[in-house]
Structures are given as structure tokens and as C-alpha cells.
Image 1 (cartoon, rainbow, N blue to C red):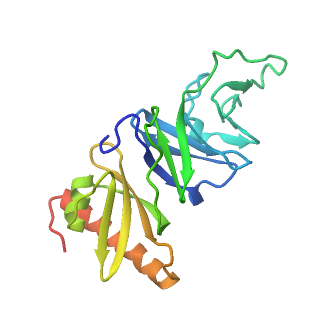
Image 2: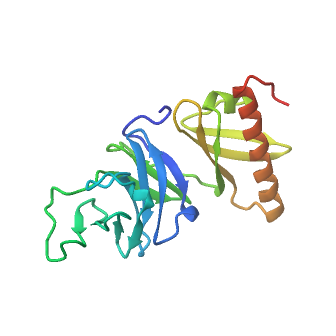
Image 3: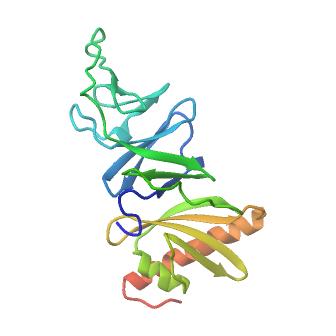
Length: 216
């Protein structure tokens, strides 16, 4: 899943898209992830599979500082250990019942995860602010061709009619890319709308290239 090998930070969501008390699916080199934020605001990332019956934890629900499986309600702490089994309320779950976790950093409006111990913090995103995320049905090479620029370390700068977008790219398999759109932190509402439209235009162009068409 280049350009993010195991042990490096992957941008999986915008902070604003994961409010306190919610859970959402995400993807990492280690496989599907349940990304969730506790009621106190801390973001965590679990392997998206309950150890009990294999149900996706991204279908679950947040209760206080725990994530619970939608199937039988098993609740897990942010460290991944099971805290509660509703069918056996008097039981203290053994420490062996746990979910695999990934490292999480939540800063500059972006949530990053790492499947292994990262050597350095995620890159700082000074001077820009998150706008939106979108899934592109094309790989990074098609996005580079559509933008007329090369990505460096998962970052792609795209200029459109005097407006510069900074794009955070996270490949999702061989033919899809999760694209986080960032704009200047001082962009006004009109410029933000224009940036969103420019990102949509770029997405369509990349998908045409992947389908064998030409950039228009």
C-alpha cells in the first residue's frame, strides 16, 4: 500500500469527520480498521473484527471511553482489552481477550494511524486547513497525471485557476485512493467552494485516465 509502508503514518480521516462518541471504518496496510472517538474526545484505531464472533467493530457503538460490538455488546478499552461481556456481568474478562490496536495521532485537523512503531511524528500541515475527503476510483499515478504534478511522501500539490490545493493521498488497494483536500487556512467561503469543485474535477479526470480516457 505505498507510499505508506508499515511503520509510517497514514492519513485515514479528517478530525471533523469523527465527532466524539462515533465510530467509522478506515483502511491501513494491516487491513480494515475501526476508527473511533471516545466521549472525552480521544481517537483510537482497532482491527475491525471483534474477537468473539468476528463482527465488524466499525458497526459498533461508543459508550463513554469504550467501543462496544453491535452483536453481543462486548466492550473494549482504548488499549484494546475487553472490559465488559454483557452476558456475564460478574465476569472480569481475561487480558487475553483483546483487539489489535494501531497508533493514532490526531493533529492539524487530520487523523493519522500507524500499523507499527513510527520513527517520527506525522508531518506538520502548517498554513493549510482540511476541507473534505473523497474516495477516488483511480490510483496515485492517475491522480498525478491528472494534476500534472508528482506526489512526494503522499502529498500532491494541485493548482487550478490560481488556487492551490494540497492533497493527502492514501492508496486503498491497487485502484482506489482516499484523497484528503486541504486549502489555505485563510481561504474564504468562496475559495473553499471553488477548491471543493476543483477537487471534484481532478477526481473525475483521474478516473477517466484510469478508464483509458484523456484529461479534458
